[in-house]
Length: 377
Image (cartoon, rainbow, N blue to C red; front, side):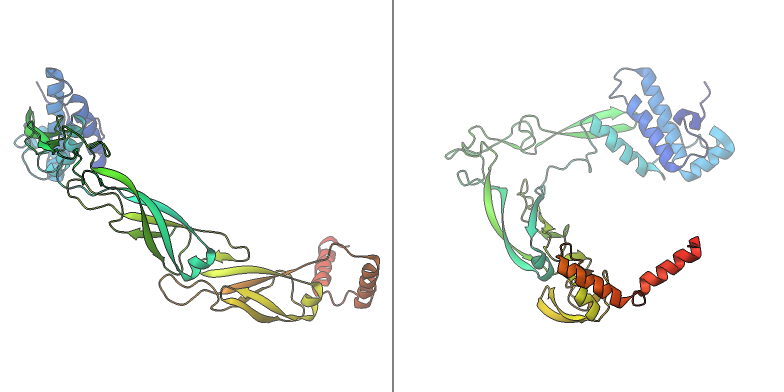
């Protein structure tokens, strides 16, 4: 019986890249794997055929010979097994996925019953605008599991102890060999008698129910550095959940949220604030009292200041998180137009307008000249 074209076997084009070939092979290998099709000879043959095609097409040199000479160029290398040459690394990745589906794994690297790091914890901390700017010392209270105070972490009731699991002899694993067309693989599963723990607690501690842990509250001091912002994260190593089987504790991540300020808004390391002034102050100029993060300062604005004008005050912004200087303070002037005037005030304004005329309003004069030029009115 003549062999099918390898590209046809994997259902890919001749120009397919490495990832496309790999995905196609993975799909077929999972579909026709003997563990999924026990006793099915047709599936076994298709599995071998896919293996053979992938071994050739995943190796650049073999693929080049195959593209030039067909099966004759690679028959000495591809006979349904693995030659151990280039391209073999891809098989371990693929079959790691497959054996995970069947509950097993490569004995060399897939599952380890040794120490495991504990889970990480996250805590959201709200801080004031000024605390974000200049830093602060904060105390937080977290809940995490710690060693049970009643059984001292053994999980066993006082006066009793753990017993080594007789099924796995304390390893927490059951190993068994599986023969496949690829050869023999050693599969590893957690022991079902002790749930992978390696020991059995016949009389559990009444407080922790055999886990060896209890949930406790702990207060932790945190140093918030100057210059942080919403979304900044402070990692505290080893302050997370306890590890398993002697593994290290997880970490605690403090995620910061800066409360909005009544006056200031932040733009990077710069600070922006709006200051309302009167029509008279804008017209004649004035010395304003300007709030800053460091306290109040006096700042003079010139006569004729327009609404929306922004003044920059250097070095009054947020300190750099890396310690290099500070941002600036930007003061935006808002000219407030009075809404409620009595008749005397209105009459005085009308007299003022008559005295002022149009010549002093440069922007208005320029605008209406443009309107006249555009519309002829």
